[in-house]
Structures are given as C-alpha cells and as structure tokens.
Length: 421
Image 1 (cartoon, helix red, strand yellow):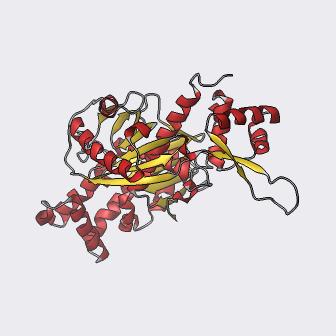
Image 2 (image 1 turned 60 degrees about the vertical axis):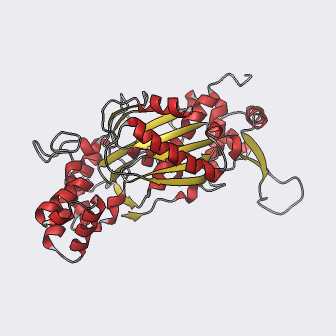
C-alpha cells in the first residue's frame, strides 16, 4: 500500500511523458509522434523509432533530420553493446533548450512554481507564502507575479523566454475556456482567470484542476507512465480526483468531471464549502476534521489558530490514544473507503494512488479501510485494484502543471506551418 512519488524518472536521460501510445496517437502528425517517442524514452535510435511507430527507415531518417534542423532533436553517442571497431552507435535526444515552460500550483497557504525545459527536466523552483482567505482574481495574479519573479530570477530568464505556463488550482475549472467556475481560492464564481492571466503576463496559460495536475505528474514522471488506466485521489483542504483512461487524462464532456469531493454521500448531510450538503469532502477535508475536533474534543481555544495547528493537535491526541480523536480519523476512513469503492465500481482502474497532505495522518487508515473498500464493490476482491500512498509534495503538483504546458505547447508547435511537408 505504501509508495512514494518519484521524480527520478524525470531526470536527464530518463525521459518523460506517457510510454504507451493512446489510440488517438495516430491522429497526430508523424513528426510529433517521433518527437514524443524520443522524449518519452530519453534516448532512441532511428531503428527503434522505425520499429515502434511502424514507419519505414527512410521516413524515420528524413523526419528526424528535419527535427534536428529545427533544433528539436540532437544526436548523441550511445555506449556500444559490445567492444569492437567501427562507428559508435548514435541515438537521438530532445534538445532541452528548445523551449521552457513553467508549472504553478495555487493553494491556500503557499503557491509553488517550477521551471521545466523541453526534455522535462526541472531546472528551477520557487515558493510564495500566502493567506488562506479567498481573494479576487487580481489579488491572486499579484501573488503569482511575485512567485514568477522569484522563479525566473533563479533561472536567469524572463517571461519572454517561456513558451507557456500551466496552472493547477482547486475547484471546478472549465479547462478549455480557462474559466474558474468555483474555487475556494477565489471570492467570486465564474471568473475568466485564464484570460486575466494572459492579459497580465502576455504568456499562453493552460488552466486545470489541481488534482488533474498531480495525475499528469504521475502520467509524465511517475508510476503511471507505463499504465493504461489509473486514478489519483487527493486529500488536502478538500478531496480531488484525476483519472487516466487509455493513457490519457480524462476530463469529461465539458472538462469539469471527476469532482469526487463533491459527490454526495449523505442526503442533507454536513455543509460543504461549495455551499451544498452531504459532499464527500465535507467528511474528509481539512475543515471537516477541524470541525469534528472542535466539537468532540473541545478545541475551542484553537479556533483562532491556523487550520494546521488544529489538525496537528488532533493528530497528536490520536497518537496519544485519545478515543475521540481516533474516532474522528476512523470515521473519515470509512467515508474514504466509500469514495474509493465508488471509484472502483465506476471505472475499474488497475491502480488508485492516494496523495496529499492528509496522507501523513495514518490514523485515518486505522482498521480495515482497504478491506472495507473491497467489501463495498461487486468484485469482492476477485480482481482487487491496487491502492498505493504517494507522499507527493507541492513540487510534484507544480511539475505536473508543467507537463500540461509541455503537452499543449508541443501540440501547437507541430500544428504550425513551420514544416515544409
């Protein structure tokens, strides 16, 4: 069950991006498929490209030559498989400096940013502390301005050097429109955040729900690179979910699907911060645990402290064996089992990754949570879905946002008329 998000797969030479070809990959230009194959594998010989993509050696040679000429690929010598005379074997790799993108995770207590080159290598990172209160769009943009300045200073570059910026934030995001329908970060609904960001900074921006960002991090740099179907469930201030089907991020028809935290688990139940009642996150999120602690443990004296302070005190009491504190985590664990069983029943993924700050609260998993999940599904354990805990920090979420930007910039680059054939 235990696991850890591993950014080592995104180190130089390791490659980044999905290793399996989605069914729709054939709709992409062949040049793009070659480029993405090389990026995913880190290094690739022309013969490997020809075999993997089903193209003739002549076509592979011609198209890779064009990619080299355009500064996207370069030749590198490979270590020979056996000693002997002759020319060393040659492979191709991405030119890292062919482009740069930034990835940003917006959250309640701090915003995190990464700078990533075109090969997927993280080359700089920055963090900006913030406040928990909901803000107007221009206030958030002011904060991101400070964050980007810190990031770009570390990398000795400017906004003009960026090909795009990916941003993940909690809430209901209309990805294709760049509109935030609702977010606990913002004080107003239906905000054209993407347009406001682009007008302010003059850089193409790609906006997404933050749980999808972490899912992209797993798909591009982590455990999901060679998996066709998997889900990521995040538990932090709220509850989020990302889903990969056929090796691609699934968003739904309108780009706002998979809001697991706002699925209903109790009619007329606890009040959720979205304004409705009975949502799953109203029993699992930070504010839900803090509310229970204040009521059951008399934590009134902590109400003026931070949410983190209340949760740390609750966790401390649970470790000391306080029955009321243990009950709070156990109850949350039962609701977690209910949510996970619904994910299994609906999508039948091979793997569910649990992530987020609350994963350190192991008392949430006291008892037979995983057994409860299986008991609530029709499979009854005949084909058990694997469940792992990945202790992903905000850096991983931001790196996932950079993957969103890398994918979008790559699509746009290969759809232009820069190519002669």
